[in-house]
Image (cartoon, rainbow, N blue to C red; front, top):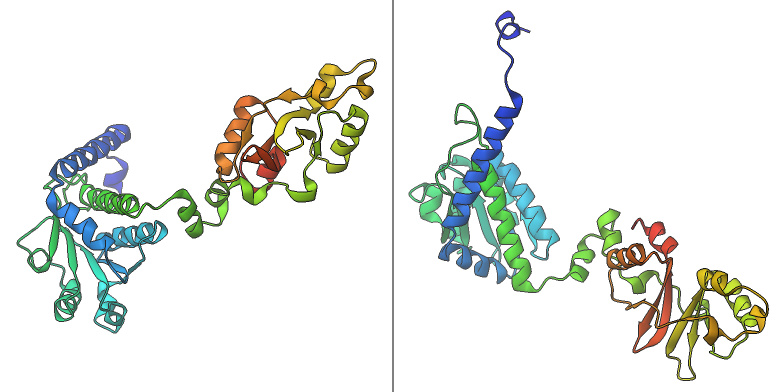
Length: 326
């Protein structure tokens, strides 16, 4: 390490971090206040694209563009990133009629973007710009220009892209979320693009993991507990659902109910005498994350899954643990 750096006074890192965050927050506030008609126009234009949204940018703006493309693609808007430096070497073929281009550049004067701009004009491909300069080459060429407000970079020299890239990223998120709402993109749709990992598990529906059919532990209200215990043991789910002649769920018997009523004559008592009436139930379309929340809040280990009042399945806390939802 150079001697002059070794002897330099120790910086106040916390003060530096707070200054950085403060400047970026101010930039985001200015961005929020600046949103107007062009933002709505951009969302409508992107929401009606028949092909893909091609997101592009150079340098730090390129890294932001990659993230925006990934967010759009994962939330129901087909999108891809095209590197502007590669575009003039064959990748322009990735951009075709029916697509739209979302180009990002703070200055709007990045030479690598010129081939994409020319391509957009030649084939009448809609061009949406995110830039700070309306009078720039990109700003002038754009069909819709989303202008970033002037804001101080968090860099002490006001050079390294920091506040500006934060605003770019936030604006991309705002576009993606507005498109989600425009399309009515649901949690069920979201799971199609996120089948793996913890997120995929949280978006699993109860009906996908419940025990059903012959696995259901069911008994009539007049069944002796001696027989109900056999049903509970055979199904190995730690509970029995009590149903009427029409198949509607009347109550539920768990290990806790058995302990509370254990005593002389227990085996001869009827299920209707032991059950907990009107137990907590869920529907098959409920998200696994919501069902686990109910189990935890109510301190339960089982839930019956019902449709039209009739049990169609049972879920156990272990079923959620197996798929990674806790």
